[in-house]
Amino acid sequence: MKVLLYPIATEKAINMIEKSNIITFMVDLRSKKQEIKKDFEDTFKVKVDRVNVEIEPKNRKRAYIRIGKQFKASDIALKLKLV
Image 1: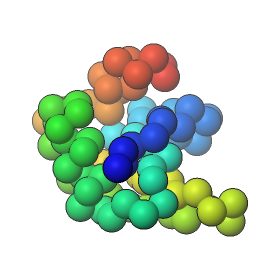
Image 2: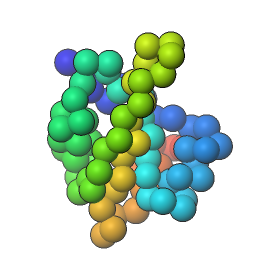
Image 3: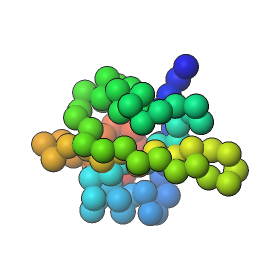
């Protein structure tokens, strides 16, 4: 099962990258927070502090992933070509 589907590139998501070191991804609806954290850490080789999830009314799941202080979410956003 592929956990991380695609990054979110809305204005709110970009502001969160710059100000709060949080990157936003759409994830599989059946995925758990621990699976999201592990997949993100393995994919981008960074430490994740916290994962919050939100299920939208359109039956999609969004994950807010806070990156560890020693890493920058803006560097990951550059790799993903979001910024």
